[in-house]
Length: 507
Image 1 (cartoon, rainbow, N blue to C red):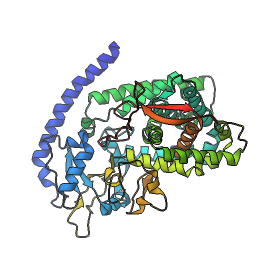
Image 2: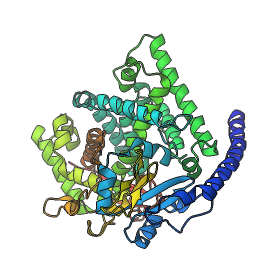
Image 3: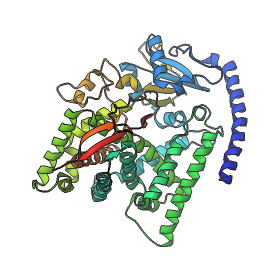
Image 4: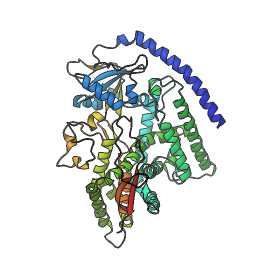
């Protein structure tokens, strides 16, 4: 603990020095460089602070975007995040440009605008390392999540899911926080897909890695984004927890080499490719940032929403029962047992109602921002006349809430209603790119197949084990579905405790 305190104290001093330098540099920029911004930028916001720019972008993001979009004649606007120039886009036409234009780079936008996140940037601030990491990450993830590999891993996934359900079934009060129990098994499944068996098989180590991951995930602070090079306390915490992960993974890798032991898992694949421990950790963290925050949160939220929606809970149960009947029609065997006979092809394709629930949950949890950067040497026009442009070097952001909570697209958008995606309604087809569930255009979600599979498994087994779902408080009184905090930058656990009460299904 003394070493931990000394480590953080040293970084606090460095942070103060770094902050002074950052403020001086930004003051210089505001004084001499800001006037050189092109005149045909989208309307510049008046909600800006001297030196640091728009703090509201970090503290009340969706509310800030709503105000600025309403004030701008086109819905597009410009602001500063520290010294970074950011062009914010809205509306259908700008949405097409954001997702389709090849001059707008994905990784170069996300890395700096998420405070480092899981993406490493080079010491000199160049983007080459980001590009290298993006290519490396994509190659490794695609190789790990191929169909045959998922099929091979299905028995272990079934075991993990059923172990969790059996623990819930053995509970005396039949109450769980799904953002702990369900979120936790998603972390275990994800760790099996992209990490090592020594972690996924050991509940204590798994919990420890989850704590490290959540500590790192929580360090995307405003000043990290404004000044990525500054040694802030948040960056010190990220470094500290990253070091702990490094030691944990290195111990596992060294033990396998010393014992001349091989495991049939993702970690062994990375070792066999010649990846060092730093690259392995970077990859695993990248995969967790890409998948866990969304899959874990949504898997829990689906059960919360279904507990408040008997119609859709019934539809999901009927679907699960129908699929199980196809592959094992012996009704003397419990539904939860017959599900074990369902093959991987059915798990991936024969649960359309669960898929709609997932799609709707993703929509409701996604009020954050997508990012890009104009890495070209030319301005990108936002209309035919060129009266608004994205200048070279500018960051670009699109508030996903402008799509997901748009009343021109979705009826009663704050309400959980998977039926809005059914063919007879198809609300997401009312505009071009009307849904952003699994990425859009040039950047589809690489982990979609695995994310859908684990969600189908979790939801199907939960409704096969339990029924009469409803939310309660600590005293056992009925509780309401928590409101989604639309100011969050990414999918987040609810701001209040959520307890789900259930009963063992008698069939």
